[in-house]
Image 1 (cartoon, rainbow, N blue to C red):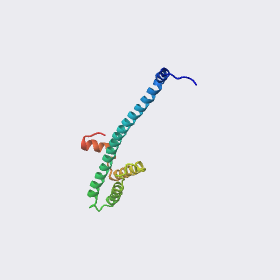
Image 2: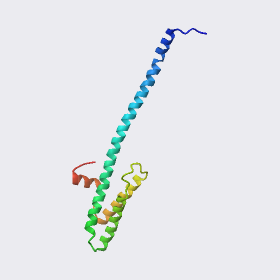
Image 3: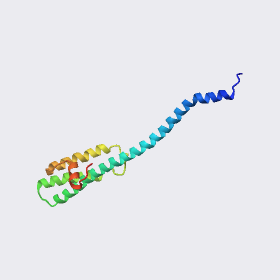
Image 4: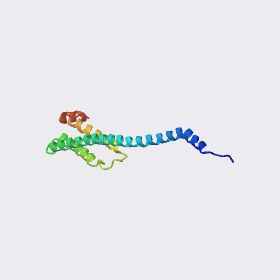
Length: 141
């Protein structure tokens, strides 16, 4: 049996210090990266959610305003426009606001956008959402 002295343990701890420091540094870096990633992810989600909310709100206000203007018209074209407007309002009212994990969020948003473009075409108005936002609020997204 070999005799292990206290000095051998001391040398082993010195030799293994590099591995130990590497492992500790990795673990600390991983934990800090996880914290920072969570913060950045939350901020990105808030910003993206706010933009999406502003866009949907714009479409809804646009549709409600035009519905009000068209509802008393007896024109055949106005009736078709009103039907398209009500369809847009229906899509927006059924939009999943409360479920951030909704898997078809992008698909539903594309449906709302395409319906908005259709309605704008029927009304012969510009479809650029960003122009309406900048023009009415002075804000830029």
